[in-house]
Length: 336
Image (cartoon, rainbow, N blue to C red):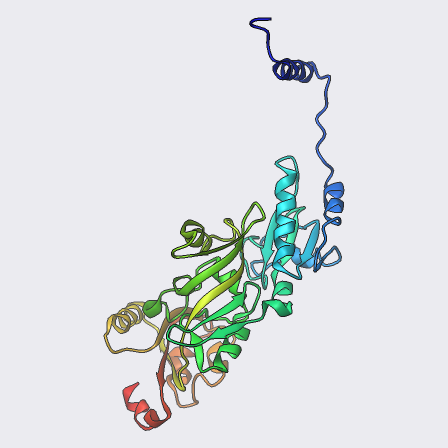
């Protein structure tokens, strides 16, 4: 019959009328049922529930969001399968996913309220995800996203190499710092850690495993670096290396005047011949913290002078290092 509506349209209209009259109740999957359905996934690792409270805390101590489960992945496929299943559940599902490295987030970025926290350090422990160092003209290291930087350093030093840019604290995961920026005293010379990455392996929000770089899938590559985990989970990174220094001269200089402190820092950063590491920070001399810095200052250094003995006083510090070889040790004192 000409002009008759198609059956699918008729059915849709009937459904809308029933909804309007309250005759149909939409079913939203129960959270426990959804989590239980994840148990059907065939994984190399496993889900756990007894460590959910630990996954609800981070370094910031400002948020505490209890997850429904913690995934201990035994492979990247575990991460991809879990994310893919959550994506397939659709918007009606209460589940979200968050990657957790060493838990040094500040505002709950590694937490998932009622969702799934992926323990990335479990992935790093898998033998197939070991740290691999490559020499040659463009040396680099392939490291799992859940590996600690201190372990990456130990492995690269065996080959006389080291990453060009660091964070101040090395007990952080590769994926964790690359999801932020990774800033330290080498950033003025080499840029932050995100500027020294050649390639990433990422599990996207659809559960796809994608390799990206400056040339391949570049939009995803640049979005994930510093993206706070909102564009995918970094499961592996290829990081540029350079020859590791044989020796390092380490200096800390204290200031009580902020203007002098910043002027000196800017001058050192702008100088052509300067230190290899330059970082400034603010401290408060609480409970004699300055006199307890291990090997930082000698008894005859100015830290013992009266102007630095006022407990609670705000002070400013420049931390500097200069790399050198063994045969330069005699002149290093004059150079620095």
